[in-house]
Amino acid sequence: MRKIEALFAVAAGLATVSAVDGANAQQPGADPALLEHGKEIYRRECVACHGVEGDGAGPGAYILSQRPRNLQLGVFKLRSTPSGENPTDQDLFEAITRGVEGAAGAMMPSFASLPERDRWALVAVVKDFAFIEDPGKPISVPPRPAHADLALGAQVYDRLQCASCHGADGMGDGPSSLTLKDDQKRRIWATDFTDGRYKGGAAPDEVYTRIFTGLDGSPMPAYGSKATPDELWALTEYVLSFGATSTDKISGDTE
Amino acid sequence: MTINRYLSRRTMLSTGAAALGVAALPRLAVADYTEQPDIAGGVLKGKVMLSGAPPKPEEILISKDHGHCGEGAIVPDPVRVTADGYLADAVVALKDISQGKPWSDPGTVPKIVQARCKFEPYVQVARKGAELTILNEDPLLHNIHAYELIGRARRTMFNIAQPQAGQVDKHVLKMRRGDVIEIDCDAHNWMSAWIYTADHPYVGVADSKGEVSIDRIPPGSYELTAWHPVFGETAGDVAVKAGETSEFSVQFKV
Image (cartoon, rainbow over all chains, first blue to last red; front, side, top):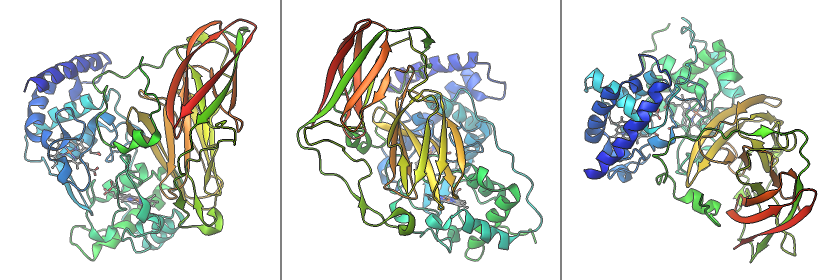
């Protein structure tokens, strides 16, 4: 355990630096006691996959088909912020609470059973590993229209060429899907929308957000500036509609 | 400062998620650089060479969009070397200069174009923190995916879709600790480009004859590095005298 102590001593030093940066009271990184608390929970719950140093090389990492994130790189898929920006604290909190489970299977368990304070403490630890001093600004997601315009959605799906990776039927089998790699040069697959499970959750505004911001570290690019909000909503509904028949996970009660 | 000699792209990337050796260090602030508009200084003229047989090129088959991208196979990271061993596309940079000529040329406004399913240019230099302009000329989807290389790790800097011809995006090149940006298109896995970022304008890219020249350098002794997408980085020492042209040569060994 010596190694862990030494490492965390360094990390704590950094946290003090970022606190000087004038982080607002909401940000758990500003509270050294919370960070210390988070490190204890991290050692208990996260080390097996993410490793003592947060480098994603924990002893259990090898059994997972998609590897645990190297948190030190500061690259996050499930952001409400534009591509290349840091996630918000809320984004990290939600990822930890929800866990990561997508069409390709479960990658990370949900930690919803931990007390809320513990999860915020873990957010502080993740930010510390990732050198996040300036959380990004979230995009704005307009309210979901009452009517799902699936015809428009299909047009936008076509125009933005989602099918080149996700396939015309949304099954993740487009012509580019065979050659996709993630940032660590590991094989990755475009999501099969007929499965109905999403890493960032299947709630419509989550799916809208993923399309808008992309999933950094994966081949999924940001599309936010390439369509209007109405078009993006129609597209979101269209994507969700692929999964509606095969699972009950989507509550498509807009109509 | 230590330099990874002959660290090849393959070595850099194959280790994947393996740790960042220096992860516990705080992020470096962008070094300050003061422009001195009237500096005359000296000139460095150099030749970049490759000794030994160039590695067998790794080809990727053009698997889609043949109408625009063409047919056959492509080498994403070509080694362009002349019969007598002069190597193109290496970036030569002086280390640790905090003042000197203004940033005008090269790389004040870095720009990358996607045309006929290739990036243009293949290798360029840019000022750290400059805004990169990204243009798609092809009537099909490209996604520009930029990674910062840090030691043996690579981190996504941004990944933006450009599904239609004529679309322009801009992105500020904020570096954490690295100098090199690798650019891919996930939709066309044979597309590859590189941007070498620097704090000062004393950098240049070797031309098709392996020649590179850097002017208006404040007199003194410098460490000079040369980096190539396939062969990684090597380093040496050079001296610059006011009003004179000094020659150097850099050799990558295979």
